[in-house]
Amino acid sequence: MKAYELAPAPGSKKGRKRVGRGNASGHGTYSCRGLKGQKARAGCNIRPGFEGGQLPIIKRLPRKRGFTNIFKTEYSLVNIEALNIFEPNTEVTVELLHQSSLVKTLAKPVKVLGSGDIDKPLIISVNKYSESARVKVEAAGGRIEEVPFGSSAI
Image (cartoon, rainbow, N blue to C red; front, top):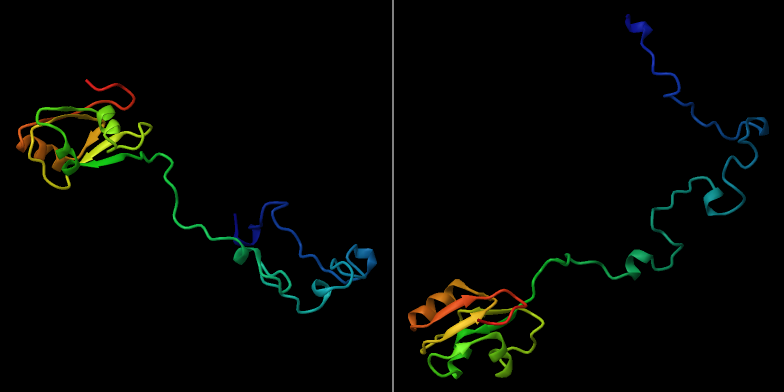
């Protein structure tokens, strides 16, 4: 094969559309521009999204910010300082937290966080807990255990 024998594959190259070269060409008279109007005139260069001076749709719609994680688990949060209302050696369950108004709903799993201090030994059965909460509960002489969401406490 020689350099002068190189050619593109048949059908891969298409000729430029030459408009305004007579009606016999199929692109005469209006030269594929339709009838009158802004886009039929010479020098027409309308930017994308331009709506003739009307406020464009891109400005009319609120912009999206960030994203929403559909797999995120929403927890009902309880700090351990709120558990000081219970008597020592009480078995604190999700239902007991709901009855004492520390948790508003049972539709979400309950997570105990380690904010504050606890000065009583308690047996806590919740769906999740933080590491700092576990350390503080065990330092006070109690224990904390995890129960699956949707099941009753031990």
